[in-house]
Structures are given as structure tokens and as C-alpha cells.
Length: 309
Length: 249
Image 1 (tube, rainbow over the protein chains, first blue to last red):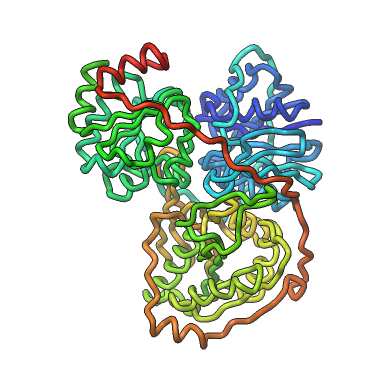
Image 2: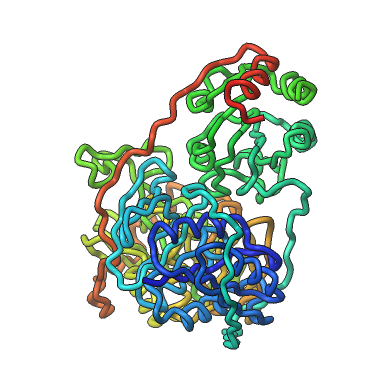
């Protein structure tokens, strides 16, 4: 069997989500190739070639793949798909955008957000915002999968020496054009790979109060997240949202501050190893999943926590 | 320009979903059903485009059992002009749905297709992308801003790490995200009017699409329960527990 893993990368290195998806590929079993597609991404291909257990790295480095425009990336993946039994990618926004296209163009289905590999054709995935887990068998000859990073440990990023094959295909559908991108700039770790996350909800009350969480985050080397309610209230930008419709995280330590624990939010963080809840409402549902609950006014507890660290 | 909108009938988002006794699916008996929230946002956007004079007609499509006509009536009451129901008692997976939609797109030639980014039952997030691939139309997913121009539509997309603005050639397929708009409630007179709006009933076979299963659902199980832990009395106790018991800081 052969598996093609389409990498998520930042042009210089593979992003952690790729290494989590690699573990899923290894559990499926077979020869694993990694496709690195983008523009100016040769360094990321170098990184991929050093990952243990990879047969070869395919590199498609061309302006038409800038920002991983779905039409063009999907066309490339379909073009190199022959000979692979599984096409897999981490369930990040890029792959969520292009992978279903790949499946449709190959006339097969896609199994989204795989959290467990039972066999080469049978997988577990959450449905109903994680309120149920479906075990699904693929009936297609080619399996197109996206992998939820929190379901798998990250594979080691070194120990390999795969060759890099440069692809020459330039596939441009010419139907879409990038106008602009506004990316949040932060020195903090990314939410989806942070070891510690401190997150605020509607109870934070105001944009300015997130400074208190920032200070705790600085001491813990943590990322700062938020609930949908906090995002909708305009306290923080949408890329900080954790939950069913935001980011799915599973850090070692998750500190939820002034958030009630709506199902929508729990779906995005309940696989965290240790959950701490700080809320003045002792009946808040977040306490039902928290390992350590502190019933307190966050405006007193959070500064005190910062001093105690 | 015609706008084609899709709506899916799903369990209402307020309902606490439970796995059924024989673990073959979630319990669908006597459960409140509703329009998938993302689809509702798509309908709202179409109605706003019509109100702004950018859309001439809104056609709403749903697939599945007869009961899906309730959700089509909801969309008609919100402001869609006519509906197409593709009746089928089979499970229609994303690819089959996309194939049928591709035929409807060919027949109706809409300038824009608006869909929810995912349905809150299967959480697949696939059908819009598949439709765009099958029709060769431009694709804009996870959209939280739409600006329709002459030959292009500009969309703001919610992506990991921020926002991306794309210009897409029309016609295009857009899948909408939560922050695009807040759907209106249908007024009583509009609900009454919706009952008289045209609703065509078709089958997948009418479009020459053979419904095929790409997957087999083997089992549905509840997620592992997470037990509540302890309450701590103070910040000092919390820090102590995190350092010495959980050993995470």
C-alpha cells in the first residue's frame, strides 16, 4: 500500500498538524510519501525529507500554488494520485478547502476529521459536534481522509533521509485570485500546537480585560484562546475561537476563564489533558468537565494566579 | 442573476443528541428538526442579495425524505422564491448530493450558489467543495464576507490564523461561515405566503444520478465521558495542584 500525505507547512518547516497526520498514516500502514506544495517552500520539503519513515518527498514549488488556492492544489493532488491507496491531510483550513475537491475529482467520498484508525479502511470520526463517535468503513478504492491532529500524537520530526522529487506540473484553473490576507501576528505558540492554553469567555466583559490572560500566558508560555461568545462580542479576533466552528485543541493544560462551557465550546477542547475552570457561577457546565474548578471572581483570581506563577 | 441555495434538515442545534440503544445512529425519534444553521445563513445572504438588487431569483434546494419540505418552506418564508425537493429515502452522502446539485446548476445556471460550510449532524464540510470541483466553478469556502461585483465576487474567508480575501470569477460556489450574517425570523404573513410558493418534487433518477454509498456506517457510540474533578478553594491551592498533582506547570 502507498499513502500520500499532503503537508501543512509554513514554507520553512512542516507544521505540527502534519506530524500528527503522519502518525495516522503510519497506523494505516504502507509506504508514505509527503507532498509539499506552495511557493518558496523548498525548505519545508527539506524538513519533510528528514522525518523518519518517509519514502520520498514530492515538491511542487510554483506561484500558482501560492496560498494553496484550492482549485490548483486539488488539480495537482489528483495529477499525482495514481498509485496511492490513501490520500491524507491534516484537518486544517487549507486541506478542508482542497481535499473534498480531490475526492470529487477522483469520484470517491471523503472521510473527514478522522480521530482513530481501526484498519486501512475503517476509521472513527466525531459527528454532532463530538456528541457521538461514528465508526465508518470506506467502500472506495482510494481513501481520501482528513486527520484531526488531537486524535494522534506527533511523529518525530527527524531521523529520516528521504529523497526529494521536484514536480514540474503547473496547474492553474484561473478562476480565483488572492486579494489580501490579514494574519494575526503573535509571539505566542499557535493554539493548535500549544502545550498550555488560557481561554476567555463572555465573562471577560471587555476586550481590554484579555490583557490579564495575556500576562498569565506570558508566564506559562501559553497560547490565548476564546469562546465563540467572546469573539461574537468583539473582544478578540475570530482566529482565537476554540470550539466546534473554531479550532479543535487538546493541550496538556487548558485554563478556561469566565466561560460557561457551552457544548459548542466543549467540542473544541474537551480532549485536553488537564482542564481548569475559573468562573463565579458554580453551576456553569464547564465545572462538569474540569479537573480543577475554582469558583471565584475572575477579576481577582486571574491577577492572583499571575502573581503566584 | 439567479442564486441557488441549499438547505439541509438536521436535528435542531438546541437538542442534546443521544446515541440510540442499538448504537446504529443517534436517536432521531421525536426530536425537533430544523434548518441546518449554516444553511440558514446561506438563505439569509441570498435574501439580502435580492433586497440589494443583486439577485433576481432565489431557488432553494433540499434533499432527503419528504419531511425536508418543512425546511424548504422555512427558506421560502425567509424570502426564497421557489423550491426544489429531491426526494429520497436513501442516505445521500456528500458526493451524491454534489452530483445532483451539479445537474441542477447545469439546468438553472445560477450566478451564485450559496451553501452552509457544513451540516451540524455529520460535520463533514465537503459538499460545497465537491460541487465546485464537479462544475468547475470557482470556490469560496468558510466565507464571512461577500461583495458581489459585475463579473467577480469578493469573499472574506475565515482561515487558520486570520482572514483571507479572494476574488472569484462568477459563477461561483460559496460555503458560508457563522459570522457572515444573523438570519432573520420569518414573519407570520411570509410563512403564510410561503405555503403558496412553487415547490417541485424530483428524484435523483430524474437527474440521471445513481445514488452510491461511499461509506458504510458500522457503529455510533457515545464519546468517552469526562469526569468532573475537584473544586479548589483558592488560587494558591490551584497552583499547588497544578504543580504537584497534575505536574503540568
